[in-house]
Length: 546
Image 1 (cartoon, rainbow, N blue to C red):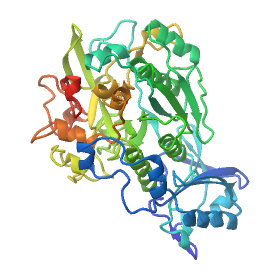
Image 2 (image 1 turned 90 degrees about the vertical axis):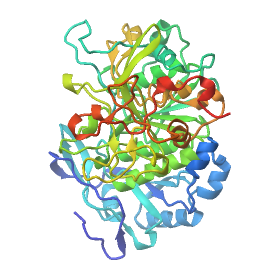
Image 3 (image 1 turned 90 degrees about the horizontal axis):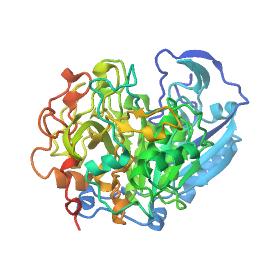
């Protein structure tokens, strides 16, 4: 393990990696193994491309055109030349140069990569699966210090999990406590999504780190709902492909659900599915490709995958946060699932954790609720928490990585239960995560009951992460208004938290997400962090300023 930089090298800030608990060393990598890495470079501009959040609150939308972004925030030719010279010196091949994304893809043997970045690569076994991993820091030549801000791909451990849950049932009949299931159009109706609009002319980007979809399954599903089958295209990132295995309990379930909810609410929108390997490199490259994709030009990005902040390197979180800044600058709304492992986010260390990338201040963190209705109206909405029956619960809490953003200053985000620090509160919005009826698809696959910790972007705005993909589709205002919203935090907090309190008790009225409902309940305060009760955002004409 190279813990100290060799002469002429410096530690790459934020690159430290630690092994997951119970990972077992299996041996060194083959020195001739071919490896590709993505090297991300600094922004030559000192200004934040996303602009001032107060300006977003007054006037949502893009801060600049793509041409203006490229002129100000692309990697500088001088920086690119230095990285290319570094590659030649270490016999690495430049596979791709993307100035807008500030990315250079390099390829070489494992031996060449270990020398170039002064690290050691080993094979490890973790939970029955092998991965190529490293520990400690990466190192870069001193002359590239501050130029290279991240190197991804040397370590290929799985980085994220799909936030998808199936209910626990012992018979064909719903258990007591299992919520009523809804189709995407029914959820859209309950949340009073705008009618007469179908997403025509817009593109929804879905980030998928595994699995795939079958066109015939999609056709069967939408036919049963009497909805036109949307146009779905696959985009390969870092070799990722649409590779369904035919098992709804695999990542296929997440991919299909995302497409079906998006198409169920915005059937005329084009859906671009970006398939990438489940690594930090694949995840980051998929997002930057979607943000800067001038062919599909998505107006919203829906992300149902994530992991606890503690599982990420600082360089990965910072690079992804910068990608979300670029999205905000270009008027692209990014909606991320807040997780489905409760307040621990699945980490067994007796501490509270929030999920990344939902914790990024430039992503709209989307939590889950339990929705009940009668006569096509919402009768109650409380935090989704099925931990008592061995299932999941919505994620949420206070970030350990990101400070309290300006737009949450009056939102009464509680101190972290870990150490009382003040940080970014997650989620920003929440919507039904308790039940989605997919029985129309039962002829194609046996998965008629499906739970998910909704990455529901804000339903009302577009039917959003489509209804906005129940996670992001419901929330995309741009799908319905014809004008991109981009970063939504300023307008949401300013418009629906205009005065002192924007929190609610979980046992009163139609109540959105409360941290008190997370697991373990005793360790979190009894009020929600900023949350928008989607059922209260009516009529449509009042949702956004004209």
